[in-house]
Image (cartoon, rainbow, N blue to C red; front, side, top):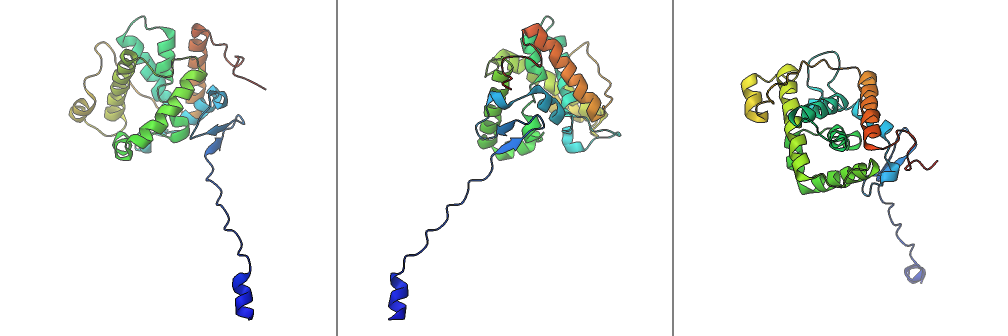
Length: 222
């Protein structure tokens, strides 16, 4: 009878597992939802801080300091303007921000991005769109500008590869192509704090040219 009584007793409902945390707290205090990023939770100070501490080439570069994504972005913006003189400030800002999503997801080398496939690209695209909206750029960069920035990005990678990452010139030309005529670069990797400040300074110059008031625009809600 005791066994029958136990069988009739109500069984506890299984606990529903909590969904995994999908947000990251930034030093600004913002909480960025990685799966559904909001422009309201994106701050240039967080981007600059993060990118200055993300190493290109997974840190496999020579020198005392890593070559940061922040410094790389400064060079890409400069090369883009060299390739296309008179480039509008908003597109120069787009070039500066072309790797801004990496302040959250890090700098994954191209072979690994390819291995991850479409899921990673969709995630990156959502974050990039939120960043663009935050800084009053089109959510999707026009193809002509995207091609220009990619060309500048590959040119910067050529110099990085030959000067920092152990590639010879022939390898670099095969992988990244010929850098633009009339442009040359000697890379001196900066300490993180210096790269961060230079990135912020450049952003503020371009933001003013675009019409965004740095540090005091309508996105700040405190």
